[in-house]
Length: 329
Image (cartoon, rainbow, N blue to C red; front, side):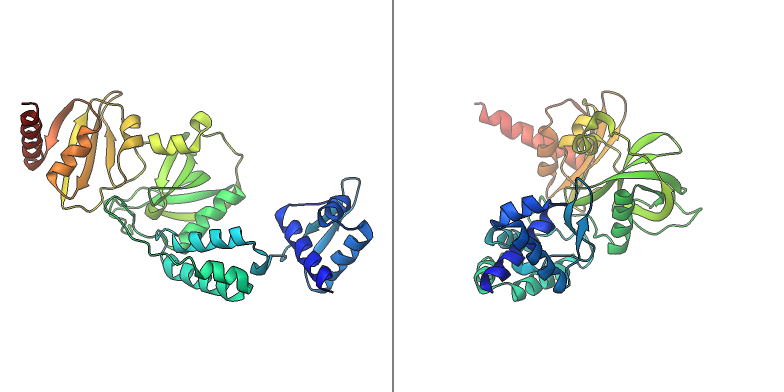
């Protein structure tokens, strides 16, 4: 009986790991005959797992809807991965921290003793540092609606909210008329959620901050399009007009850089804003805990700077320049 139970659990794990298996493949993985494998499949069905038979030359077995795997099937590495993931989950969705803690507690409670000990041994304390520029958390329902539209390839009607993230109505400052978009990718970068979408009205690709979108799903299906450059990560990182706003810092300044906006957008810290001026120049607005900190970040771009604002930032540059010059003697 113990061997049968272990095989059934192993069989269930195999069925959950791939869309479809042939009988011969399952028997080979389990190290038993095909007849025994059929009996194990019937055992799972009696336990309530919907193991479907796929008929035809390429037939076999697959786990049907509602056949989710119980947590006790995790191996030790998977259990540790879950423990780490749930304890380091970003706080970019409302309530996610509490939900993640409850999920970890639930999973730990149903794990076998050996795996439970491994998970309980890895208790982390997650600290934020000054360079984490987290965006305001997103409403879970809004995030789910956008994610579902991406997965189902269904168009969205979106309104882009004001720079402060406040809800707006037609006629108010910051309101952008509703537009029809094809949502292709949901991306997390620098603790921010971005939607990569094709704007149907203007025939161009856009990157939107999800926390600044009011989205309404539609039933209109769209065909998949290749993202410019066929590289989602690079497209998001090099897009300067992502809808970002400056993070809250004691000191915030700006300067025009003799660099293309796409270059600065890729390497600027989170919580900064890049504005394209022409093909070779852009304006970068960013903050830090001191004016010297703002100046230091701007200096890392090693580019010509003009229109440095405010005056406090200019003073910081002069003070740093004098300090560095003194080091040469």
